[in-house]
Length: 102
Image (cartoon, rainbow, N blue to C red):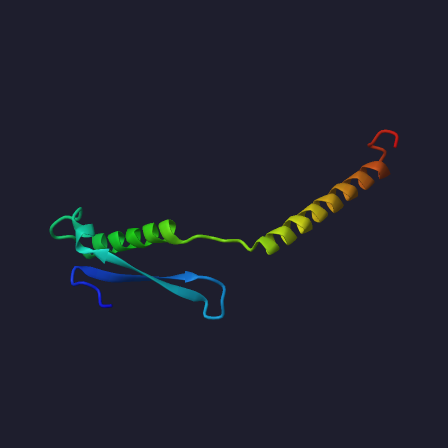
């Protein structure tokens, strides 16, 4: 379906780690969205507006869904790493006599 004349299809790309390296995103900017701009905006003002619209679209519409399976694996890994670190610190403290009787 073609866009209406009062709409512009904005596009930006997101680095997503896949082989292509980035994934294009599109959304529409409508003429009504330009109403707050001055009557003769500079190119820089329009670039800033465009960048702000892209940032707002990204923040409003991009959602992050961590894989619960990977999240569970991370939690288990992190707990094991912390337990190892604590055990090593306790062993070192015992070696130097910095702990009470066992």
